[in-house]
Amino acid sequence: MLDLKKTVTLILFIMLCLSVFALPEYRITQDPTSQSVTLEMRLYKVTVDNYGRIQDYSIINTQTKSMVSVYKYTNDSYDLLDSDGKEILPVSFEVKESEDKSKVEFVYGFENGGTKGYIFHNNPNFEFDLSVKGLSGTVVLPNISLPGKVSSFSVENLSSYGISSATNSYVSYKAKPFKISLIVSSDVPIDRKSLTVSFTGKLDLKNFMGPMKLTLIRELYQGEEYKTVNGLLKDVKAISWTTVIFYWFVEFLWWLNNVTGNFGWAIIIFTLIINIIFLPLYMKQKKSMIRMKELQPELDKIKKKYPNNPQKMQEAQMALYKEKGFNPASGCLFALIQLPIFIVLWQVIQYFGESFAYNPRFLIWQDLSAGGWAENWLFIIISLIAYIVNAMLSSQDVKAAWQTILMSLLFPFMLIGLPSGVFIYYTLNAILQVGITLLVNFLYKSKGIGFRDLFGLGPKPVRRLTIKSQGVK
Image (cartoon, rainbow, N blue to C red; front, side, top):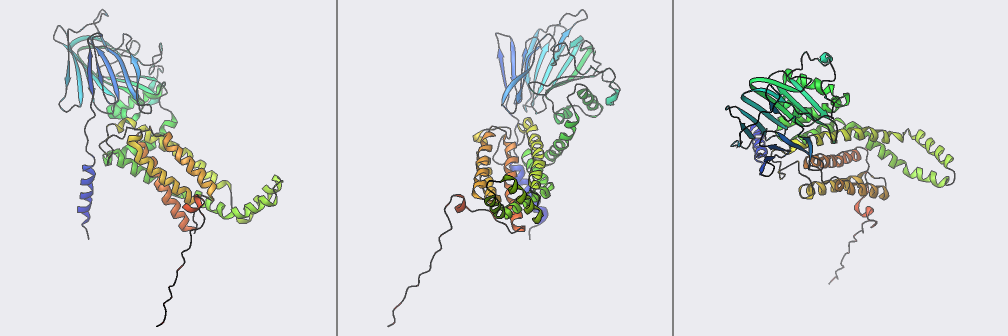
């Protein structure tokens, strides 16, 4: 008998070997014409000119795999002003890269020896820092909200959100083209009216500019700081009661990822647990389908008996259901309950599309954020086989089986561009549905149709044994 401790150690070692991680590559390009530098990280792209102004900031749309501009320069990009409101311009500029490729720094030097530096982090949290040293003045904060509307300060009294003071944090939010937040946290007070920060000698700003996702935001802002930011997000209507319910599932999957260290394993465990929780619901739905299948011959007789009288036909059907103690709406009810649950869980998996890009290698998949045929072909084949088998096991007749199969054939190809992480959830669900159907069929002594029935080949030919007679000498 194998030693349990050694077995667990071996399994963890194998998982570790399959989960090799390397930070995604980034690219730095300089444009002498516009005197700017562009940094392209895996999830965002930022262009900064030689005077330290962010000209453009774009983030990736994980569904379209394209960069979408969320900010353009309008004299408010962390510009450094003196006491007279005149911009203080640097005299030098250099780019620094860390040895481990975890961050890129743009450093601007000034005549008096002071510096202004951006630090862009190579991680899934859309974070960058601004640090000013050896200078004094005012920094103008950017705003991504609608023109003329400064979000996050529209409510005078923030005590309803449990915030005693929000002077060191600022939130700007817009809902289109998708929900995007800009969050700035300062080590000195922020002027709410002018959106500026005045400082002497030193200033540090922690910034988030990305999709409105609380798990990412909480990685940067914690404790009382997060409490303040959370209240400001509620103020700009970025968080609603539906968001709270959705985040129950999000937090659970996030916790699984932290435990396993890999979103691939986290999604598998998440899918298994969710299916176990809702197993009674699935069982009832399958049982309802089997009962309907058992009643089908009698229902066909009723249809033949009243071909031209729909009212009589319906009355006879209802009488049959009452006699057999069967509610035909029960199967539809269970299906309707499952649909919103499936949609929510699907959105939960998609929620982590950005984090998939920084996920360690999972089995043969290097990047769970990638999509397309090259990445998802194996998932598509497995899911198609699983759904075809499930349709045959659970269908009442050949026609119903083909209808289910045709729908199953179209669905994966419609989703082929989605991240591989989403397809792990989709494929495992398909496999589990086969297992549940087999279990229900076994418990209720039911069976579906076979391949020969599906293709109209008729019963399998019976082999006849032939006895060769031998003559007697």
